[in-house]
Image 1 (cartoon, protein in one colour):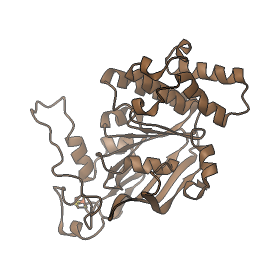
Image 2: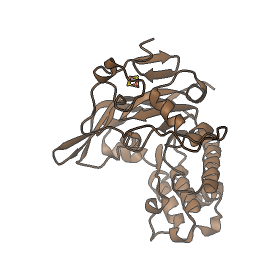
Image 3: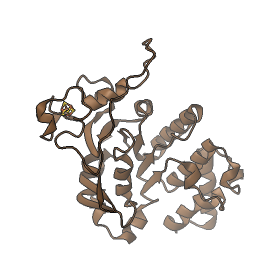
Image 4: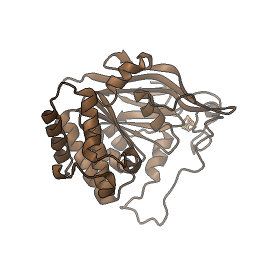
Length: 324
Ligand code: SF4
């Protein structure tokens, strides 16, 4: 199948303003995603993953946040320039988001059927009443919940079922792009595996492209075609899943992420976390943002931004690799 570009994020910068401080949350992110593909966006909490995703949907908190630079092209149109009325047509219909916590994503006083139906009533006005009801039944069955339960309220479902309902809401209009922000973090491992399997199946059935935000590299290995590693608002390594999991060269931060995972083959009693903390986003260091924690730091790292070493689709931003 020929690859067709769906989303292209170019040099995206996002800030938050709080009192007298400016938080530099996203600092020059470049990403691209083809139709039907899955990109894993990984990194520690506070790396800017959710902010980057919310920027695509233009759902950043009003007044305190701002896209200061860059562009986000979706099917050729720059989302940062679209009027709000156009964004309302895109949200839920062509681009959907699954949020981390299903408890706070669902409305407790409306039935799940009503909540799934809402997106159809907004975006698929040509459907008759019967067709809309059939579509709600169909998507419920697709996510493994009996259609007889569409009159129930969120509190009548378990955590895993609630997350399935959130997925049903996100997918009912068959979006071209799904942004899934830690969709399985609030779930136990058994339910997590079920939900991931469900999302993989639905993605294939509906040919939906997906950005999967997670700090769980195991989830990425199971689900993604490409992986982007984020640190302090920058993409410091990006490539095919094969490049990230099996490739020879890596950014020291990526090596640290893998090193902090338990290795079943080794009989070690302790994990090896990355030393130190993410830098203060209101006062980011000069040069490489990772230099305060990097075991391979050189003098140049503290003063000069690292270049991007490009090897096919595998890109590493680090002085160790120079510019290829
Ligand atoms: Fe470490 Fe320098 Fe590479 Fe940054 S640029 S990751 S400090 S070696």
